[in-house]
Image (cartoon, rainbow, N blue to C red):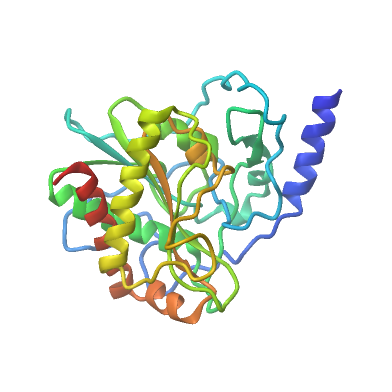
Length: 306
């Protein structure tokens, strides 16, 4: 009975969380099922019918439900997730996780709680994400940047997988995205997002898990991945480090399923504040997104030693 009450309370809190506009962006092709043109060939993704997806605001409206700081609870049973196309070959595989999805706004079932850590915590399956004041949605920005990063990495011979095949579907849930990232051969799991905070704050920040669940070896490699991305973003993204969260662009968190459930090196990037006029101008511009994507790709290549 206590568990039922706890889950019911969590669901009530999650349903009260904020949502944001899902208005399509007229200046980008990121809402279609075709990848954004980046100057490098990229395969055309297929539409997924899977019902759900992921967002984690930097300042969540509700804390994750937890059983307390005691011993680690048993891992949840394996989750089913939609088929993901993994490039052939045997080299290291980078898994990119573009946050949210284009049809989340019309599917309120994404508010249902799912496991968010190994300690009994839960969060919403996904949310709609944020948007600029002009209505450019985060899910479209995430998808556009991811497509550009993928093309740049593929041009350098890197195998790249995605947690969702397009920007017109729903899902998968945050726990399912982590399961996709934990597939054999994955050497890095990178969640790509943008933030929605007060208009005065600007800049990017990168989240690391403050209680590394996969052990010290994976934690060390996750930190190396995070530092490589941080340095590349400082050098080439056109974004400053965050003026409103964390320290020098780093912001440890303990509530992100994409970090908590990862068995591989993982990091979570917030590529600017969509509510800030300066960041939004860069995010809404194809040239700005290309610059951000180039920096992300450079950080991944540095992590790989290329």
